[in-house]
Length: 352
Image: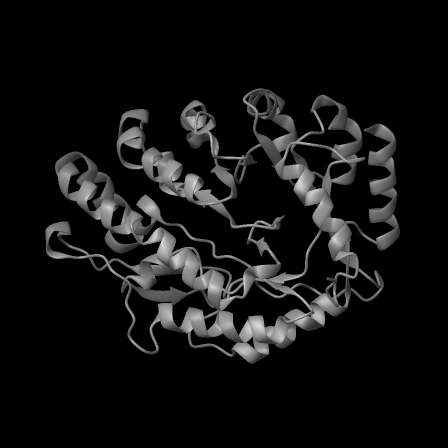
């Protein structure tokens, strides 16, 4: 099977299978989408869509970009059908608001007392959850034989509770009302599988799964994450977050953990101890040195048997590729031209 915008789809799948097995064919996985015509590049449209928006327009803009893009290496053409990082809270009834440029969204906290709520999917027609499924079905139908539909940027577990309650209030609740938060966590954790399976079916992911973090898997895959963990100490993280992360990772066939910011590093040992996490994406954050300058962190992750998802430049790959093992390694970058992308692939083969 091939895809219109990825004629070498079957070849690319073999590299991804090797990645998940921590094996190397002749080089690591490389995702390098680049303009077919560097003189007239087409900018990728925002990955964030707006609930109640123009879905046909979003699909048309995506296809315009995909048709003008050379998906070098193991890059896959996939559209993100999602309403922003707080969408899971919106699925539970919180109201979504959007930035003017549609680059992000947020929810208005709606929970004042955890004892007074039962967390369940809001299946009101026209609500975020039902619209998301309609959008996914539309995208899957239009993408048949052409492109893939991505899994969601889930932000489940404690991130979802933050979207419902507010950051400061939730942090206070962990200390003042821990049993009530435990109850809410049990409810939100129980929704992970139903949400994943509903989106999987609506998006027709029989050809495999992709993500907002550009990756691919033949089976059920997603990014596992909890951004609010940066605000917690190890004791609270081990009680409220880590069991949920382990549960999500065990449910999926494969997953990558999104480790965001230096404040999350205090939890790295606990995260690395979760056996079902396959790989780590280390994001140092704004104002921090790039990930290539955190080689001690990257090597520690590899030493724990986990793979690495890296957004290095071509120069950074040339300079530091040998500092890491190629097994379980994948690079994401945007070369200036197809020639530049292909030259990098050949260089990696000679170095591996």
